[in-house]
Length: 178
Image (cartoon, rainbow, N blue to C red; front, top):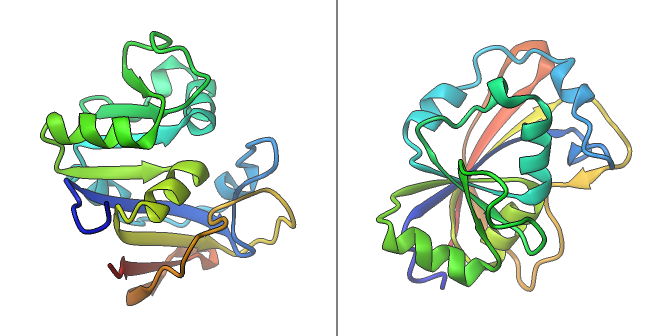
C-alpha cells in the first residue's frame, strides 16, 4: 500500500515531552493547561477534507459536548471494531483499514488528517502518512497513551522545520520516507 497512496495523509498532534498524547484514561488536562498560542492548526485544517480517528479519540471529542464538534464541513471517519455503525450521523464507521482506504479513495478524498494514537500507528504501518507535525508540550506525565507504538520496520523521517511556540512548546514538522 505504501507505493500507492490514494490520498495525502498528515498527522498533526501534540505530545507531552515524554511522548504521550493523553493520560491513561484519555485526560488532556496537561495539554489544555499550556497555551502554545498560534500553532497553525486552522491553516492545516483548511487544507484537509477528511478526518480519520479512532473510537477513543471520537469519544473524547463527543465528551466535550455537541456544540464543541470541531469538524463541521469535513468528512469524518472513525476506525473502530466496536463502535456502532449508526452511532453518529456526522461520522462514517469503518471496521478495518483496507475498507476505510478503499472508501476514502472511492469518495475522491484528497487530504486526510489522521488523528489518535491507534490511527496514526495504523496509517504509519500501512505507509499512508506523508508528513507529521508534532507539538511538544514541556511537561512529563510519566505514563499514558503513546503516540507511537511497535512497527514492523523503521519509518524514516526527514526534518523540515522546528519552531518555538508559546508556553515553551515546540513544534516540529517531518516528511515520511517511502
